[in-house]
Length: 146
Ligand SMILES: [Zn+2]
View 1 (cartoon, rainbow, N blue to C red):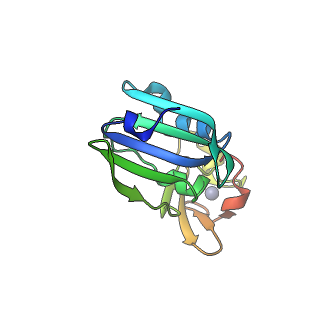
View 2: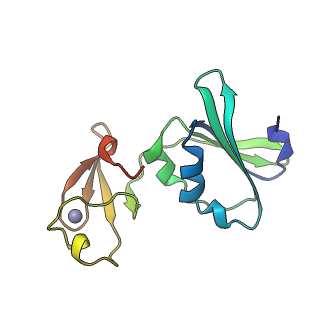
View 3: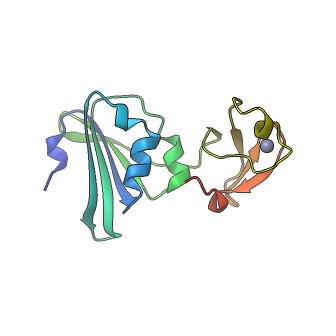
């Protein structure tokens, strides 16, 4: 069993629902990483039964805001000198790019394929996002790409 101590400096993304680890791995572009990265699947978890964990041995600026969209129960620990130096609470990001696809067939993004899909958070309680271009509303639970 790998432990947190196996990382000197870096990030531990923990409490990922089993099976979602690989998605997050890809979202963060870790498949192209040139530093040590570990994806641990189906680790035992008291809370979740099974969980996935990602360990990144590098102090990097990751855009992990998108993780808040995927699952706010995910925890992120920043490791410095083999100790947890900071814990990051995930929230719904204010702005997301190219994660949510606008479903409105008349939206300019359905015509202009190179255009970035941009959505802004409308309401944290209802978990709604609004398309930057056409104002189409989408709820987080309906985002199929996550
Ligand atoms: Zn749109």
